[in-house]
Image (tube, rainbow, N blue to C red; front, side):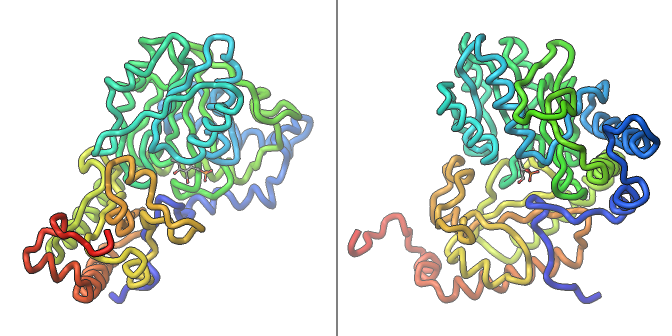
Length: 407
Ligand SMILES: Cc1ncc(COP(=O)(O)O)c(C=O)c1O
C-alpha cells in the first residue's frame, strides 16, 4: 500500500483527535449546549452531568480516588502555572524555596522565573547524561524552607520517564509538596497519584487524542489537603480555583479521550514499542554514527530522539520535509539555539542541531515507519557524501585531534 505523505511523526507536539472522541463531543456544541453552572434548568443539568462524568473519567486515568479534586483548565500551561504559582503564594509563610529541574517544559521553568521576581528562591536541578534526575541531588537540594518540588513525568523532547514514585516518597518524607507535569504521560504510561505520592498533577487533552484548549490540574484533598491561591478571580467555578464558564464540549472530549487511552494503554503501548523498535533497528541497520538522546528503557513508548552526526541539521530537516518531526535545533523559531534539554544532557551543540524527535502515535502505521527509515537513510547518506568532515571520518581521522585554521 502506498504511503500517504506528509507523514505525521510529531505526536509530542499534539495529536489528532480520535474520531470516537469527536463523536462524544459534537452533541455538546449543539443539542446539549447548556452552561454547566446553570443548575436551575435541564439544559444546565445535562451539561453538568456530562462534566461530572468526564471528571470521573479523568480521575480514573490518574488513579485518583475521587473526582472532586479535578480542576478543569485550558491546558497544561495553565495547570502548570496554577499549581506552581498557586502553591508558592499560598504557602509563602512556610518557606520561600522551590525546587525544579532544568529540563522541564517552559511553562514550568518560566512560572518559576516569575516567582523569582516575586522574591522566591529556586533551585534548578541538573539531570544526568541519561536525562533522569539524580535522587541524591534532589534530596540534597531540599531545605527547611522548601515548599514545593516540581518534576515532570515524561520529558516532551527525549521522552524519559522520571522515577516519580521515589521522588514522591522523598518529598513526602520531607513534608514538601510534589507537583508533576504529566502532559506527556497520562494515557501513555501508568500514572497513579496515590502510589506515586503526588500532590498536584497537570495534564492536557490534546496530547492524548483529544482537542486542544482543555486540561486539568488534580489537587490532593487529603493527606495533605493542598490549598492554592487562584490565578483567576470571577464566578467561583471549580471550587473557586478556576473561575470561568466550563468549555463543556471540550471537557466531555477530554474525559472520553482519557478513558480510551486508559483502556487501550496495554495494547497501544505494545504496538508503539514495536514501531519504535522497528524505526531504531531500521535506522541503525543502514546508518552509523547515530546517537540516542535520553535513557533507552525509562522512556515513553512513542518517543525516539536521535542525533545524526556529520550532517547539517537544517538540510536534514529540509531533506525529510514529507515527514513531520521536530528537531533539537530551534531553527523554526527566531533563535538558532540548540535545545536546552539536549544541552542539559551534555549533548554538544553540533549533535543537538542534528537531532530529530520522532513522536510515534496511535495513527501511525508500519508502512509509515518503513517509509521514514528509507527517507532518513537516503537523506543522511546524501548529506554525508557531500560533507568533508564525513570524508575525514571515513579516512579514520579523529576530528578531535584536528587543529582547524582560524581556531
Ligand atoms: C511537558 C509539557 N508540559 C506542558 C505543555 C503545555 O501544554 P498545553 O499545550 O496544553 O498548554 C506541554 C505541551 O507542549 C508539554 O509537553
